[in-house]
Image (cartoon, rainbow, N blue to C red; front, side, top):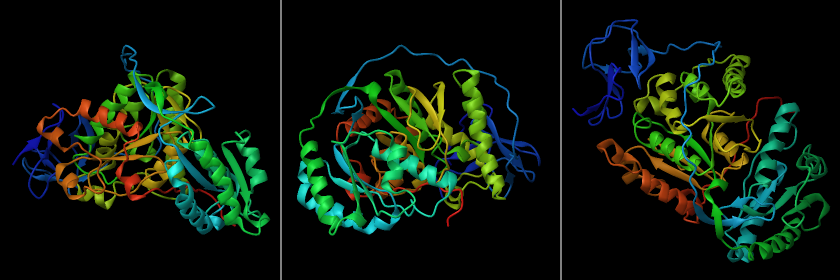
Length: 470
């Protein structure tokens, strides 16, 4: 049997072949109560005595994690690399931002107009689709009957999408009687470009479809004049995400994404890591890479506030990993989290941002929000990510409003699901260096190469909810 020991201090290795690929095997006898060590960190403790060569998984290991913790700032030195310079072909917008797509988006203020918006998008693509990179709408059930923070979160996410530079033009489409009606929503938006953003209230028009098509025609005419030009790589914002993880996620795709994050940060780009519950158990790695103590405090609040969210709803903080993760060889949340944070690379944590808040800092940022795939990619898009690098070991078709690059952790998945997977990180397990190839692929996506979610039309949003619906 072929195995891989990740860190010199590990007492388990990962099986690389056979029926238990991605699962762990004991490298020596481990006593009941003794820590199981992987990635050089404890991922739980043994429930019973485990013999050398035995399978180590949910039947004989339990998490060490508990509730809220107190943290001490113990900064590690993070090298500041020499700044690099490079360009890619993108779209320079009138407000100075850069986009990697030239699309028109229909953003609904309320779920009541979802089906109409889909009809409008279909007709608009037939009429104007050749004048831009496509016309899209992203349906959601919210915008009315929400109270307090839920309403504010819906508005913040929609605002982030409206301001996204991948959309050369936006139609904000409302019903008219919703809580988040357009006059109210305009107070949230505060400012916009009248040439780029159009508004339509369905109840005010005899034929709202025809009225929408007329406005989209104006946006399409404007989009048709946009051309790709040289843009600085420092303008890129890239989201970091994983879903359907397996035992290879922390060995191949996630470290590859982490090295890509470090590399584009050297060019002055921004990267964003989210999925807060999947930082639990590895959070100190991120905390101690905070650029300063004030940022450390923000990371502590990020972690503990999300734990308190679980506790308010009387849920177990560490009810993770998912059944699919366990089937793929991930046993405890520490096991999952230590693999997940590999996506962050080794750079300093520059800032922490809230849902719907645009990224402001160059380098690595942390974004609050759950691990749920559709919610997480929505939050990343709303924060301004031009694209999302999404590693998966089990496979998933889900896509954000922006290009969602699926990176397979293993070759069998990449070969089986060619219609989902964009890049295969599997050969890394055999020692192949894919860093340059992956960087070139990411730049090609920024320059217009379609990802599988774009080709298949798999684009959706889900807005985080934590309150009362009337």
